Image (cartoon, rainbow, N blue to C red; front, side, top):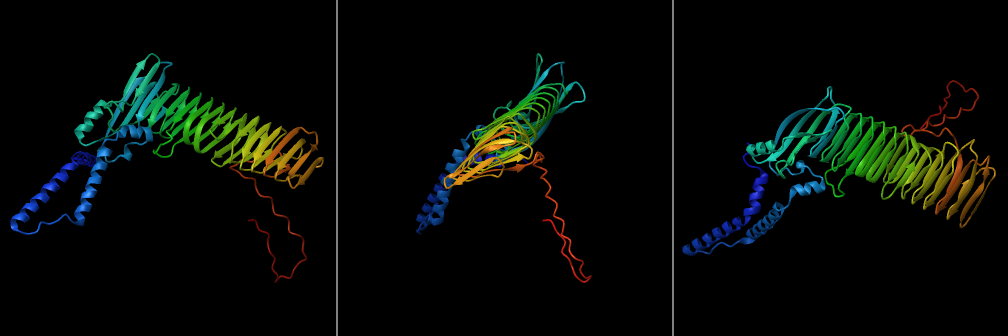
Length: 470
């Protein structure tokens, strides 16, 4: 019926709850006077009455304070949408449609403070906008008024077309609008969003997105992709992620997000910010730069996969120069080509080389493991304070004592130079293979079981045990 909402009842209570105390006091006074006239003892308040009175006062004071909260500003700061405030009226829905010709060479800017933005490829040279709006209000008439004041807008200024969801056209009222926009593929796109998911599919031009709260998905872009994910550190709006794939240019991501996944990029990738859960990279054609408050990483090319989370870093088919500086992460690098410099502490470092390169690893409170392909010569300089060195190669001298261990020498032509330093951890150098380019998603197959030895023929009633694999 939408006659009155719980939110409106709450507002009335917050403003007029002292009247309940006055009414209650008047009733008790009437009871007292009537009892006096009848010559009987007046009923007291009682323990239950006292508890009810205290509860009413606490509830009233709380409601008064809550009514003074600026919920729109709070939702902006914490990344909350209208679904978190169901007490703010009833929900009403509206739809709008807009169409606009796209001039040759024009770029498109999309603005939406509250709601999702979905950009797809149109079948013509027109911009087509479909807006689905949700408004919370006490009455239908109030919702209709706010709907008229928040119609989406398209403005043209030279070669820039701006699409504005206009969710604040009625002031700070709870209005959300999801935009579904079809654009010609050739139009470059800039999106400014605050609360809502952003999806962009199919662009021939630069894509720039600024979003505070919500997931971002970008796919199939012939150009650069720039993301600014300025999520508030006190966000309560749920899990946020960014996924980018099939990009011919460079990719830049900065700000804060829970998850970032980037794959199939022909250009360079730059990430700068705080990414709390995980970062996944795959098949990056040029350099990768990654900077957070805890980890600094640079590499020349990634032909395989890289997976980084709060306590581990795994990568395969990495081309150097590679530099990693972090702490408290288990580092596993497979099929590394070129030079590498690794700095870590409180966790182990494991590197499997694919070809010769200059490798330096400095680790505190963690082991170091390095695998060398059979045909790669190297020069070793390994030291461990409080641990041991294990390097069983001809030409390498290993000395271990109570204080630690050292390993030095040259194997083959000494093409690779290994400098390995560990404090309170062991250093191990072992033979590997240039075939160690296994993908992390496709682990190497286990070795075949050994052939069973030949045994004399047994009588037919005897049984034999077949070899099995775990």
